[in-house]
Amino acid sequence: MKNVLIISTSPRKNGNSECLATEFARGAAEAGNKVETLYFREKNIGFCKGCLACSKTNRCVIKDDAAEVVEKMLAADVIAFATPIYYYEMSGQMKTLLDRGNPMYSADYAFREIYLLSAAAEDGESVPNRAVNGLEGWIECFPKARLAGTVFAGGVNAVGDIKGHPSLISAYDMGKSV
Image 1: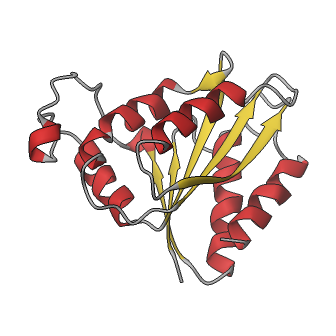
Image 2: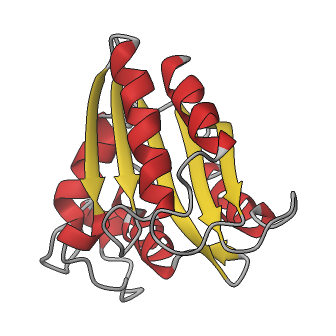
Image 3: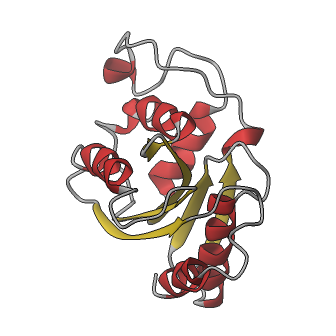
């Protein structure tokens, strides 16, 4: 049994990337894993100030919900990020969270597998590439971790557009394989 943390960074409840997260969670739970989903829209997380105090203290000087999320990330065996693709990149919410994860850089972390679940109005194989590259840059700071898989749903814009999209099956199958 693995400890699976899913972080939905969509500002929209039941948005398309969040639907991918739900299916990934369902698959991971059915496979017998402990699964928790955090919704960024329910958290108060500010921007990194770049002060680097966390490199000495392993704690951020900003008092908000990021510390709780970082603790959960450190303890997870698997982390799945779900993000809408904005302007061919991960959402600003997801990037903010990755930046605020800086206190983890020198900490002992459990996660080994990282997944990216993304959705965009644009369709095409290359649409999520910049988001994948950005996440891979973050992962490189954690040498015991790797990008274990990605799922992309293209051609979905309005809430609910993803209904019946084959990416939902892919997200479920990926979660089940964790």
